[in-house]
Length: 468
Image (cartoon, rainbow, N blue to C red):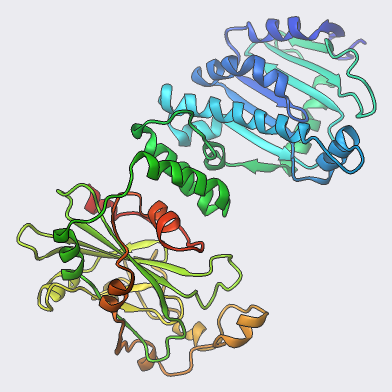
């Protein structure tokens, strides 16, 4: 078939020989792969993709979204027999994602590429539109080549799979056919779902893991946990705790946990009780760090988030002479540090003061007014979420249902009531009741697997500046 612009032709070529020829080029700067799952191509050419990425090239992969109606339609046509499916197509898709994950991990950890640079070079998207043809675009400074073939319909045998159409444009020429198919690729690409590098790095299972693998496995578990993929996260958390079993605290460590118990105070109108209380002691004794994990019954704004609790944290660093040396609290995704928390604690039997935001339970470390405003950001600290008195005094985030109807619809009171915290929680009584004190760096794994029978949102394990 002649091309009108430069007389390039579409040839019928052996698929594997043509692939070998294309990837045998030494100056490839861009590859685009498009198909249902492209498993065979990815399996054969993953090493070539790594080489291209290492040389600064780009790789774009477009696959059929396994959550789409089009994927299910194809799965049912190929697999469904008397209401049963083999899940072969889904398994093949998982294998393709695993190969792409392997490429990413090798680039990050063996070839030491930076993730922010790599995510611009290496992109994967999932399309919900029907895929009739598989495509491989390979570009070098001197040529543009395209290898493509019709994907057999589910009712057809995969006849002719060893042969593909091959089109090559060299010397800076143009091809209407190449341009048309490339434009089609980008039409699908623009509407497709982006697979984030964070997702691609998750779900990593290590065969026969060693203790040195624990931090990496834990990071994967945390990412899965954030996505509410709880079964997978729990499996990896269990692996982490098997590799680094949490320690039982010594009598001296229990005394330390009690000595530095924070003073936790709420408003008179706080609608939720403290559900559970867990103390984590950092295993590196030179850090002298304690984490006090406060688990409230829920968050007034988030009935429907599938977290039947509200996980907040207060951290204490103590000195060799057993005084408070550092204090931090978790505040809506930020670590709060103030100038007055430590001296105030040392003046009050070494117990730091923490006030609890009504209904939402953000932990307001003594001196919080330095960085957190009531309804507006404090100058110099725009990233700290405000107390939101005006909103909460009008309405919380709306939800319908049994519990939603029984929770307060708003804060009933004036501003003075909203920032008055006269009710102290009996943390010592909570600690006496269950004595959940453990020695471990992996706080979310310990709480999720050993302490509570419900899901908590995973939070920062330890303050970064304290660990440093």
